[in-house]
Image (cartoon, rainbow, N blue to C red; front, side, top):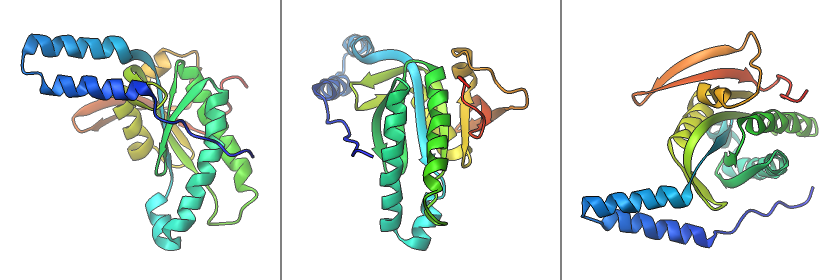
Length: 217
């Protein structure tokens, strides 16, 4: 498999940082509101947030050492990146054992979650115990600040992170109700409809084992 090259920072990120600095320093309320509105006009968009987390990162690192797990993180990134891009997604970054991606369509994000897991199942067949990779994924939809091809911010980012990192177990994707409402994905009849409250935020979501078939199958 060819080496995946991750994106270099764009000049848009410098522009965003400059606007945030001006917003932070502005003491006039009216002018601060103008800057805030300008930030959303320049960088705001509606779309889908996909955040994956490797299962068992802390416990496995303690048992076998961080170098071993860094190797597995590298392998995961090489598998995830082409699947994200092949489903019309933008892989913004990989931070430790997490991958952060943006999609216009929730359907593409859901499809990518199944395809990533299928690719990991296939890759795991070539390795022994202790080398297997499993992911949990959180998906949400809404208004975000998308900074070039490098970063995003917003409520959907926070929600997808909580789903993928805190609530989902291995081989599972959790999709918010608002993401489902903006998709054509048909929820399996037996899929669990869940409600969670984290940090005084209520999250309504659907629990999908990633062993389900993808939306196009």
